[in-house]
Length: 271
Image 1 (tube, one colour):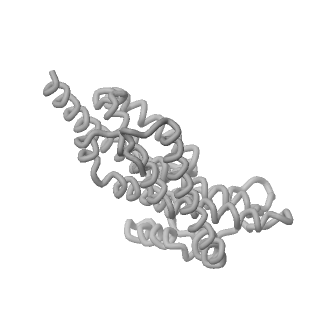
Image 2 (spheres, helix red, strand yellow):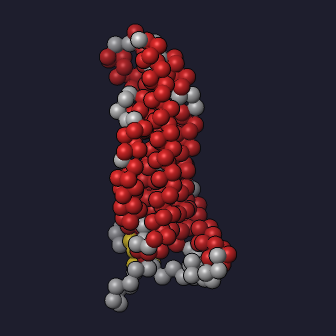
Image 3 (cartoon, one colour):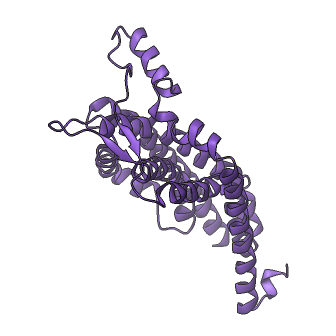
């Protein structure tokens, strides 16, 4: 592509269109693969958290036995049933899962295209300072997705699916089930981008380590509220969800402090 220092506004738009097209192609390419292997995707991934032999349930049971709680944390049965109530229900769920999965798998490509678009506008020292940003962004995103899938989603499914109300039986539609699993895993991946967002906000001077420290208690309250909304209303579940986010917040403070020091040195050298 042309040198971005010499590009006109229309050429910038063309460059952006080129990057967006690559991102869309990557999403659809991965989505098509997932669409083809629907049996594996649904049986081994989407519907896995509703089986008692799911990895997370085995891990909780192992922990329960090792901390002398017996079978209190063990999942012995899953009583809710997944049903389809519309003609297009299964096909629509198949399409949506394929697209969301396509985005998740292609995230490194999508971010790389975004980064390739904005990088030419940065100075050499700025580009050098964020070397490896694509790798760490993808690492955080996939860590969040795995955390959402193996921790938050099973807890939420167990609580909501087995919640008792009089003699009402739990028959969950496939779209409701799929949307819950997909939204939780995708949201967790995005939440785990907190350090990256703080880095760029610190870079342009909007966020400072002092500001983050000042609102640490407020952040704690917000995290606990979010945890209470997306997880069952018990202390253990909320702590499991809150701890990684709070850890990311503390890491973000360290990142902001480092960026702020570098900014001050650059301003001092220019002065």
